[in-house]
Amino acid sequence: MTLESNKKGFKGLTGFDIKFLALVFMLLDHIHYFFQFTGKVSVLFSWIGRLAGGLFLFTMVEGYTHTSNRKKYFSRIYLMSVFMAIIKSLMEIFPALQRGDGFYAENSIFSTFVILIIIFKGIDYIRGKNFIKGIGLVLSPFIINYAIIFIFQLLVVPFFSMDMANNIYLIVTSFIPSPFMVEGGLFLIITGILLYMFRENRKLQFISYGIFTLAWMIGIPLIFIRPISLKLMFTNYYEWMSVFALIFMFLYNGEKGKSMKKLFYIFYPAHVYILYGLSILLYNLIF
Image: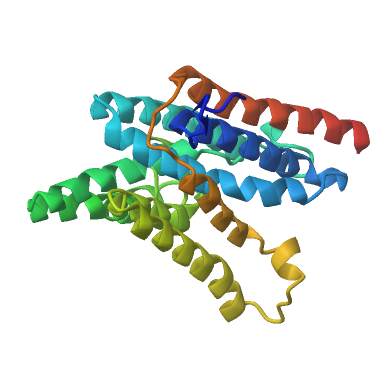
């Protein structure tokens, strides 16, 4: 990788540089995720991989803010979201698509981005003092989720088996993502909101990201998990390491850098399914 620079020296990281680094960190994380069953992949891969989520959110906020066509931007992400969510649902519905130990690929960060973009639009309306429309959009992913659950309880569950009702729900939420089922859940959603709300003030943006990440990822284990030790914070509950994404956010120079949209939209699903397929082959060879 060649970082953007000139003869005067290092000028910081462009948006492309940060995305590329995030892809590398994510790849390492997913190598551990898909092959940890072997006991041969170091947890260090996932320590490094913790940086990917925050950096992807950061660049997504920048991309949404500066894109010339937000509808087209949303459409691309939504279509990728549906594509990966349907594959995930099929893997859950059909055990034949799962690995021998029942594991299957649950990755679908695009669904999280879909919810965030809807909330971002609501925040924009609120800033423009269109409070009713803005608050409605911000709350809509949650309201729709509960409305779907209510309709299912009323019209689906009484007439179908629980397995069939669950399968129908999985397919429906592939097209209408639930904020409670998407990758990263409420943590990534709130993190994305903070990054977007304070995007015009880098100091507040970075401080809010750091404080929230540590409060959520260290505070919750300390409160609810007993006993807990320093060792567990590095072996089981190491999500807090995502705070180190701040290092690369600080180095962002505000420039877009190279434009390689297809790289990011193709690499994410491609590497997930390739690694998943390889993990199935390796599992079958070992067991």
